[in-house]
Amino acid sequence: MLTRKEFEDLEDKILASYAMKSKDSGGREYEEPQHEVRTCYQRDRDRIVHSEAFRKLEYKTQVFVIFEGDYYRTRLTHTIEVAQIARTIGRGLRLNEDLIEAISLAHDLGHAPFGHAGEDALKELMQDVGGFNHNFRSFEIVTQYEKHYPDFCGLNLSEEVIIGILKHETDFDKTEAVERYKNKGPTLEAKVVDIADSIAYLSHDIDDGLTSGCITEEDLVESELWRRVYDRIKESRHITDRNMMKYLIVKDLINMQVMDLWRFSSERLRELNFSSSYEVKQYHLKNPSNPVIGFSPQMNAERNALQDVLNRKLYRHYRVERMTEKAKRIVKDIFDVYRKNPQQLPYDVCQRDVVYSDKEQLRIICNYIAGMTDRFALDEHKKLFNPYQKV
Image 1 (spheres, one colour):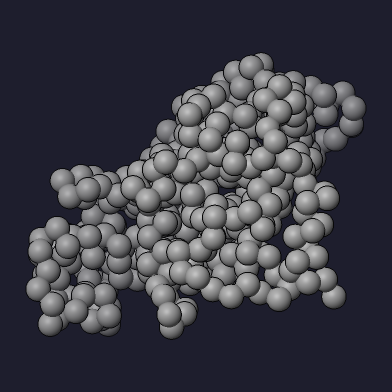
Image 2: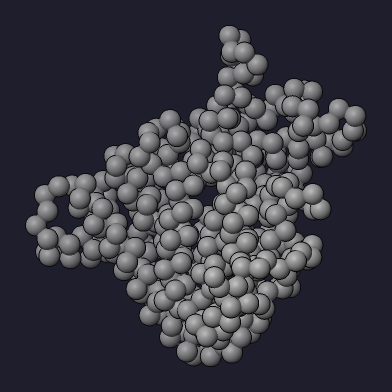
């Protein structure tokens, strides 16, 4: 059996100089004894997997809400795909896979029910009292709201995981400053998760979109990247089954992006020649708009063009718009009921012997709704609005 110290020694031998080594972690907010066998990031990953918020991802929307069918991705399956892609990238770049996995598994813990529709509704409802940001909500979950330990609130994760969650950024994810971490840059492992997230949703949204019929192959031929992959598979294989063709194209799309990322990022790492993870963090702090991990200019342009097709054809499809607006109405209805009479909130959510300010009351309502799954929100809506539904 390998001890934690032996695992840490292995990291020194196997990982690149710029990788984040477990023994060099900035530590936890609350000091704890080191584990005999597991490194700090292995423990972080395990704590996230056993959290309530992680389990709830199974019933939270990615694009298609749960009542549309069992085939489509949920936040949980999306999260698992992000972790798989991120670990593959990290291994090729000799980064710390345990840290990558921990950040990947936690990056969407703060999502509201019904995906971005639910988040947009909460942003609008909370715009005068601080808004709503699911990255910050993820941060709050792992630092405050998960309660599994008698000596502290939250999961007491390592600093690098916290920063990776808080500073996670893609086209759909924006960071929110927290004073304590404002002047601390993310690791390469965190940036790998950012880009793996974008690879995952670009690819699986195509899969789910084609399956739903909300986007077609004819729509996608506008994209040079799609055509390139499609033509290559069509020429090398004689396949008439449309589903099989779809799987092969999506698989090749992911592979093509990862291979490009490896080549371009490896060259960037050679140029920058980081000697430690500390140098990486400082670089990211000073150069937020010039990332180390990324795609070649050509791949970047082709990905953006393909994303534009999805934005116009899939996310604006009338069925997706209907789902989105329906979801927003459900969230707003629930919010308005609680806002008008907070006494309807459960006792463990809103204490009756505490006097809250209006802002505090709204934040309690927002956090309660944000923690709901799609299924729970639908049931709650029935309880509040259907006179024949037991409360």
